[in-house]
Length: 260
Image (cartoon, rainbow, N blue to C red; front, side, top):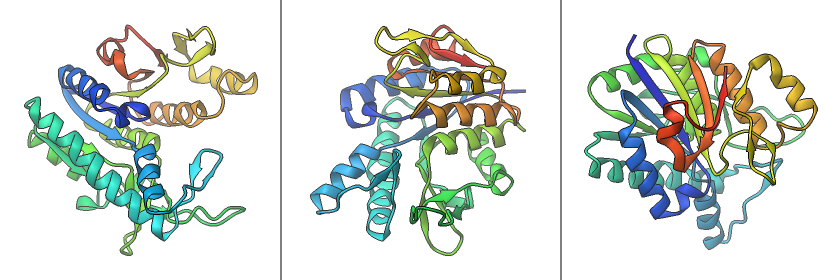
């Protein structure tokens, strides 16, 4: 099977042009077929504030009302997406910026209200993802750049977690390719000691619950690990978590945390 790497990039690197440029140069050097999934939450929050709309967060998750979905659609699907695509074109990579609504790649369900109404937030059903269209784009020589947006097939855009989108696409593409999934962010990996930045080099999925219970895996790392576990359960070969400025070493398995 041909190799393919799904890379999710988020956090501060999206906000800093020099860091983003350096990351995309490294990304262009990753061998084989590639898909890039990006976030952009801070930029969306900053734009909202300029318009007098304060971000509402619950446990790190954005409440996405009508005004907010308009903002994140413009920022994620427009500004951030096209900024990344244009920078990749400068690296001679024929990238195409997409949301889940484009070519119906990722339809989703609006999250039902339980204790909190998250608004226009999408939950994905893996079997409904249109992997064949994505494969066709890749086979045409295009590199998909996916924004963290899906749609409800009723005319509404939905804000959807970028970690989840990356794991979902990796899982779907694993039917066609040998897929590695890489999560890049500010930290060098999953840490056993946050202050000393001590990286856990390898985690087995059988160890995850224990690491959650003892607090080693907590807060924002939990969804990444859950997504990694899901992807591995759907045929993804390996998942790596580490720093955005060590992408080349991550891709070669020489940095970060390996989940297997």
